[in-house]
Every structure is written in C-alpha cells, then in structure tokens.
Length: 69
Image (cartoon, rainbow, N blue to C red; front, side, top):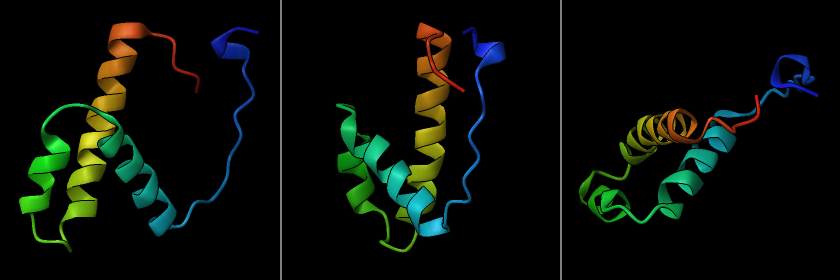
C-alpha cells in the first residue's frame, strides 16, 4: 500500500498527550537541545519542545522520506 493509499487514523489527542509526545522526540535525540532546554523556564519547555519536535520530524522526513502519514 503506497503512502497515498494508506488509511489515515484520526485520534483527538489532549494537549498534554501532544506535549508528552514532543518531549519524547526531544529527549530521544543526541543533540544538545535536551540539555539546553533545562535552562528554559519550566512553563515554556513544552512549547519549545513542540517546535523542536516538528523541526526534527520534518528534517527526518526530508532526509529519509520514509515517514508514514
């Protein structure tokens, strides 16, 4: 089944679930971002991690082109 034919599964994630997912992506990479994020105010971290996670996934997709929808 090609990407164009793949079924899209929709789930309504809570904001906390989305932020947790982004934190998982952020903490799984070896770059200095996870360490640097400790210097951010705690209440700002989820938002910065969300930006980083989006950028990381976009970069991986551009490099590898094997991400599922």
